[in-house]
Length: 640
Image (cartoon, rainbow, N blue to C red):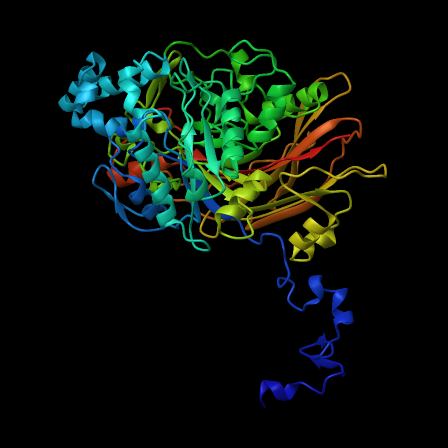
């Protein structure tokens, strides 16, 4: 009997395999209560994103001064080809290919001195006319330690604002040479942008470095060459540049007015800013925070880079002593110069969670929250290679590409000590809930903060906030429909609630298909009390089976299957998916608050374990070999 013969005439009820099948030709009325959009297919008229698109907002090529000085030779074309999944040859001559291609990429080369390094290495007469230029060129020509010394001297001179203006004349925004390089950047993005398959967003990194204190922002444009080609990037060097973010905001405003385009700024990971990334009273310039500052920062900076190769910036153990997962890939020893040591009082203005809390207080004072940002991860790699896979990691600069001694070689020195090579982090990735793989859709998702960060894993996370989610919404296997229908996604604001109940949150996560199982889902809450004090609390809301919180509410560790000697781990613990509907048990309707989800994977090896196995070398004493990768969603805010 053929399958079609099992079915009966339309309008009757068929029992097949013990499942009741309704009439074969149902009316629109009968479907309207069951499926959205009066269509049998629940996806036919869906207007929300169905999957995250994976990308990197922060990659450097040989066009960036520091990348080129440290030996990067890959340009824009190689960077795009690699991100799309093609095999390329690295700056150190090694074949390299991503395990999985990216969906999109922002090449964010430093706007200051675009193209300078290539001319310095070639000995351009305009550079050799200056004593500094001759000294740096000679060091690069000599190679080895001399080249490293020349590189560090040039970077320090730049950080301290001591590079002669005349030396940089050809590499400033008003010069023909500078515009030609920018046109090359824009044209390369146009060439490799393939809507629907791979998106090349146009951008750059504004490199504010105040005595080594990092205030960098990545500028990302929504449109293409028709808009970005009308301008050249904003820089920090005089006479037209500035290190003050307020001047960057003015430049962004002028860009939109001139071109009709759209742009946003993304704050660089703040852990190397020595306490000036998230000011609460005064800017580094001494200017007091005022309504102009908070309004403009809120307008132009919807995103924060919470994790990258130079450390994780979500939380710090001194700021969050009750958070057992706060001390993850912590870089807190200094800045990018030797001029100022790190002190504990700087930390509160460097980490995301503290900034989110301080933003609530500033909103109560000024009416606008300047730190109402979504969270993304990115690499900040200076190799032209966007790599965040632990077993396929190509470092931050060419000297950190795979070699037997890279984990033993110091990465950088600060006033407080040295960051060793093994401390560099294979993080991170930006996940964007965009409706399409196009510039407009991805940029719009960033602008509305419907994004999340991971430390390199591609685990999927949905996070919704509302007032009446139920277990049935989560267990429908199509929870996103109810998520958008009854509340707001990550990055949103809770709508007003006329009743007396507390908000609830629907959160669920699926493991990376080729990655580690999940340990737990946590919801991090921050709030401002009636006295103006800020607080935080971390709630375990879902976890893998086989354990329960103790009498103090502490959930036992998930376990550990890592075999360091074999560079291996097993997925025999944890869960492939986790989810829950959680109601805030400590809600006070008078308190401003934010909530975000943090998803923790089971323990897996860090990249140095794979290096030790492949090269047959010893792991340095004290080096961290095991970690728990994670995801941070953008927050959802509640305002009384």
